[in-house]
Amino acid sequence: MGLFTKDIKSLDDLFVHTLQDVYYAENQITKALPKMIAKASDPQLRQGFETHLHETENQIRRLEQVFQMHGHEPRAVDCPAIDGIIKEANETASEIADAEVLDAALLAAAQAVEHYEITRYGTLIAWARRLGRDDCAGVLQQTLDEEKATDQKLTAMAESKVNRQAA
Image 1 (cartoon, rainbow, N blue to C red):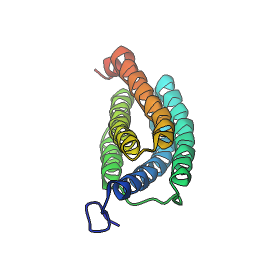
Image 2: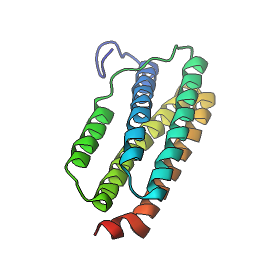
Image 3: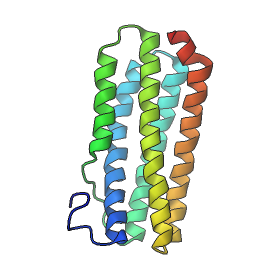
Image 4: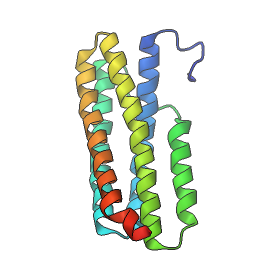
């Protein structure tokens, strides 16, 4: 099933497809974060990435719960958006020799991921409510709240320390 194909005939189909998309994205993020942890030189940034890795693992479990609540087996579909964000981050990181500039680039890449996730979860919550699935919306809201909090922490870290050191 591809996005905007004849296989998606209803809002429910689109909801499930987007769940599959974000399920893929979260799983890709769990693969990318250990690499980002290893590359980060700032201890606070490294700790933030480690915390987010554990949160992401919990978010995957929540997605699996939503799939089950909605009567579907958890399944991922390719998400070109997250693949592109991760690919760009890897390419940029490979071009940076200065550790402090690399930290700023890694932080910016993490925020791009957060912003993508925030849009996906916000949309899923709105659709779940429209579909009368407030139970699913409630579970997804927990993740959206975490994503927003992580984005705020990354912004604070960038503004108070990482960007200043990179300059």
